[in-house]
Length: 401
Image (cartoon, rainbow, N blue to C red):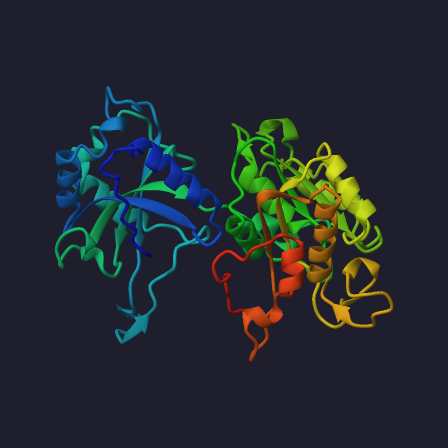
């Protein structure tokens, strides 16, 4: 568990409420974060942290007369920490790892009740009803975390916190939950990471292209990030697409036929998760000018805001260069699919029909083997110049095991 400090600029250009909303939306799209908490108080006892919370008016909104007095709430206890010494039936002490909490590990209810009784001065002020299943205000007591003294003293080992937001439930996109699965499916953590690096925003009608779509794992993540959920849950398979507000228009290009990548199954993967499916899933080679023309027509003939993709790589999937590679007629040199795409994008720019908007972002996986640098594996500078693409920063590197 990590601590993050957020302060409002002195100019107050961003209000506390706007900053909180930005933070919440950020967490909801970050696949590497499970849950985010706001630390309300810390202390040596439950009674002490309850008193601090009252003095700081930390729960005024859910008290009688508060702005959210009717919100349902719950208090749960979570203990963390190193090895503990416990006594076995034979009275021989042994070490035991503290349980890690998850959906299959229950809270110690006896200890929860005891803690709540010690905090009764605070808890009795809450106006809403208790809901242990799906509360609107989730309050947590956290114990045993290292560096709890970030708030006050070294002896403080109990934290009172409010849950701010949860990260996306990426488990519902795992390959073993999908209807359409290819031989090399992209894991959901990688899909969400690609979209977040591209800085895809939750705003109306942004357009996204995946030119090497496969089973559309990347576009599933993009749809999740850019779709504004309503009252219906995304995990409710019976919910129709009308339960969510379309936040993007996506187009997929995939060279394989339906025997390898079934388009109907791709659509079902979106619909069963109540997400808007791609406006078109085109069968063909993205280095073909006609296929790229079809992709633009699918969004009204415009250039795309984002190109996000996991291109094929490796000896088996290398493509031989052709006329569109700009390497010269009769060339037998092989170049990567991504490099071929860059040259094709350059042709579109020359023809006045760019595939990517000026200022748009292209994000792609580039495999880097041991002993190589990222620059060694990138499409060469000629290809980047042809596509009018400029590397932002030095790239993002992630070791894969």
